[in-house]
Image 1 (cartoon, rainbow, N blue to C red):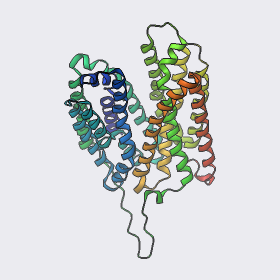
Image 2: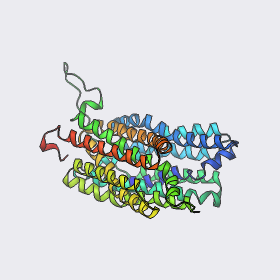
Image 3: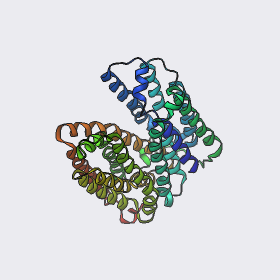
Image 4: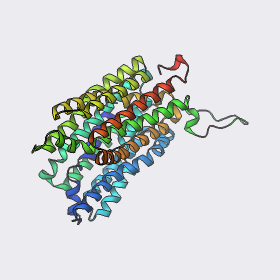
Length: 396
């Protein structure tokens, strides 16, 4: 778990370093029109997540067959090469191709999630996933901060080489320090008996699983839908301020800090009282806090509410992932968890797009209120499917 934690931090830091200087790099590659720079920045950044969403179930299925550690080795080795080569590109098309390659060959954090979920005892899985989630979130905060400093010190291209070297350290730690316990293969079916063809055959409660996948997507949708409008909202709450970017960065970091603090603790709570109550409770609290954010009077209130929302969201992904793991057979867990990761990526892509559209046409408060409604829907869906299984199994 600690190797996966450290590897996830380093790979996420390396992946998010480029956020502050990506438009600058694109201009260096010959794109001069400001609109084209903005478009290429969005396309090249989103390409990685799109490819990762499409391939996560495939890597999960291969992990079920050949081992989850091998998938982490593949991901860290592939990302080392792809990130290093990004520092050598000569035009924006090469940059796009390598960003797609990172999404295709990468997936260290998703692979870590699968490995920790399947190797940890079930009664501690949500806590372990909460620790891992804190590392992932910490990496996503540290990365952009370092990305604003490193290019000025060593140059943009050298920053990509540094990213590759950082991921290579994760590759070495994964290769030599992780010990995976492989489950025994299921015996072949007797003649005349139907063969189990897919990982879905091992799902104990399909309705619950469908609700969990939907909730995972809604969670990331809700988290990311607000991101594009935070800076604009900060400006509206403090007209005439000259430190909009700084305030917006602090407000966004406040939510991430809340998640880092609460994820292991809420994961431990989910292990003790059951996953559905924690999922529903966190969703409802986050929905209430989003409603309050729509009525915020100043940026101090907004930052405090974002921190509290981060606290409430921290326990969701660990509890959702652990609950999915409890409802899937061990030999098909990787593939099903891959679908969960794909659902999260769908939310990450759809959230900012929808949030920007709603904010532009209906105003900033509408984004918070509509997102709040979606979280209430997710809570109702989770509670409804919880009631579709025998009471003795609900705690799982």
